[in-house]
Amino acid sequence: MVYFPDNYFEKEIRNGFEVSSMMKRAWAGQIEVLSVIREICERHNILWFADYGTLLGAVRHKGFIPWDDDMDIGMTRDNLNNFIKYAKDELPDEYKLLCMDLEPQYDSLIVRVVNSTSVSMDKERLYKFHGCPYVLGIDIFPMDYLSRDEEERKLHIQIIGIILGAVDAMSSPEADPLEVEQFLQNVEALTGTKVDRNKPVRIALLSLVEKLFCIYKSGEADEVAGLWRIVYQEDFHFPKEWFSDLVEVPFETITIPIPREYDKILRLKIGDNYMTPVQCSSSHDYPFYKKQENSLRETIEYEYNTQLSDSEFNQLINDKIAESGITQW
Image (cartoon, rainbow, N blue to C red):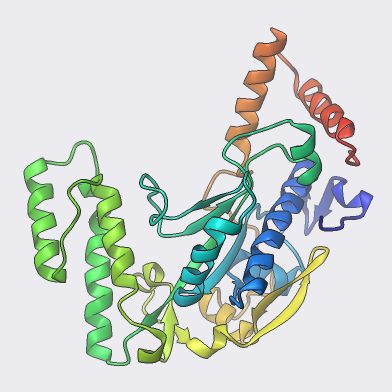
């Protein structure tokens, strides 16, 4: 297990933002998941690096951004494919690897590794993940290769943009079936590929987009990009060597790899003032485990046949954490 001093799990004010004890436990639990990912990567010479909020947190805070609640890492597509190849067999039994190749109903272009699929107050689970009973995961963002030919690159990105821009409308229950079929036929004519009609429309289109992401290989490219981002931000591309030249930096109680050219990357992604903390809202509800917490509370209240106050619920959780042998605050 990753080491955390006992006082790490105390409630704390960071940059004027209160980080709760449970959020600290969720952070620590995610770092445990990351340590499993890292072991697989090191065993098979797979390169990975901190990305998005985790990259910014590593550089600016030497850990999590105080108002961030999840971890993001990146891999170039060839490294990600290797990771999927090995991780599907080497992850611990209770873990799950979520990607469209392995999960027929998974509908995201982001690969995700989770420590479980359900909330649990089991003592062993609480001990292993530092007192956090919730499902914890790491998002893995692929970096794909871009054509060296500028016109070819523009067409590639334009086609991806057309499909991505229509995914929600075409997969809506209110969508006209005739319009959907016509769109699918147009996409097939545009890309020269078949759209799988046996899959839900959203998953079929995203699967096609993922295939389009992978058209170019490392030897055909000088640059990489998160292709779902470059559709909306044209300059969101980088020399591919930036993501193989990595340095280790402190992150909470561990170190993690980041691109040596992190300054250039962050200036492009965020702006020249990226070192100035600005509290902003997350792309999802904060904390990420809020719905899980509500579900756990409802389950406990049903079992005890009573309604719990916030303090009673928190005390019950702390009692369970104490029983597991983990320090609790």
